[in-house]
Image (cartoon, rainbow, N blue to C red):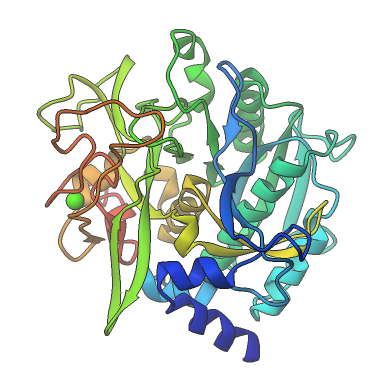
Amino acid sequence: MRVRTVALALGAASTVAALTLAGIENAAADTAPRIRNACPSVAPPKAMCFAQVVVGGGPLAAPAGFGPADLTSAYQIPAGGSGQVAGVVDAYGDPNLEADLATYRSTYGLPACTTADGCLRIVNQAGDASPLPAPDTGWALETSLDVDMVSAVCPACRILVVQADSNGLDQLGSAVDTAVRLGATVVSNSYGTGVEFAGETDLESHYVHPGHPIVVSAGDIGYSASFPAASPHVTAVGGTTLTRSAGGWSETVWPGTGSGCSAYLPKPAWQTDPHCPMRMLNDVAAVADPATGVSVQDSYQSTGWQVVGGTSASAPIIAAMYALTGAASRINDGSVPWLRHSAAAFRDVTSGSNVPGPYSATCGGDYLCTGTAGYDGPTGWGTPTGVGGLTPASVG
Ligand SMILES: [Ca+2]
């Protein structure tokens, strides 16, 4: 309970206060909290992880970002998930993954989830338990973020981590295929190119798995369409700034979130927005602003508790909520929020923009880059309040 109290107190803090209080990773003398990407920028057809971490100020002694109770409250997350398998695809290895997950879950009072009890399974992209890929510091943080978010949202889910040999999209795509083959109910993908490229059409088949929702981060460079989020066969997840307000929660567009109109991939029939003739991103959103970030435990070449954001946080939250619907086998793409949205099912995000951003271009000032009433690119139909908006209509 002591830890939960700390988390709740910090969750209530303002953005500025959260930044001031959240210091990590670096030497104690490095006292200026700031945000950096966990993974370096790369050019397609490689992908970067979309985690952003608060650094500076010295190691954190206790969790300082949003924890499971905060997320459960903000998104009205129900119980459930027994028998569901949350697949997580990342690149490279993380030697401390299981130990760090154990720390996260025990700290927050969640049931243990270990390789010994079969709850946690870690394989390479071929589906084998060994050899696992060489470790990478940035992707290790990313992987911990993914399994921590899945744990926070769906503590009863089993977790299948598939580690691609590298950050090449062909490798990551193979890992997605493996996750589905090994029984993943849903597959969370917190990575992408940030920008589109012509060759993405040749890689898209890895993300076409009807009956296994493929959930993808929208990217962290502001207004821009990223692949594989641009696939019309996935759910593209944008990001918000999440703040606790009197009696509840409020959200605005996180300026870093990707969004936009694909240059290469066609518009699916279920998308009805007026100004994008191709696949429009995004479909839904969840918290991604590192200044209102989530708590993550990562000790691989790092100091333990971290405050992390980026659309790498929002994608596994949505993936795990899909698992909680118990209806993932009837989900084929990102259409469900478009078909099932309602005022009760989503918190409509109506303010904020992802233009200007460090790499963004103007979008014309409309819903492609601006939070508006109803659908908008940065946050899709909004953030889920319960799983009703993520649950497909009953057959027949
Ligand atoms: Ca909106």
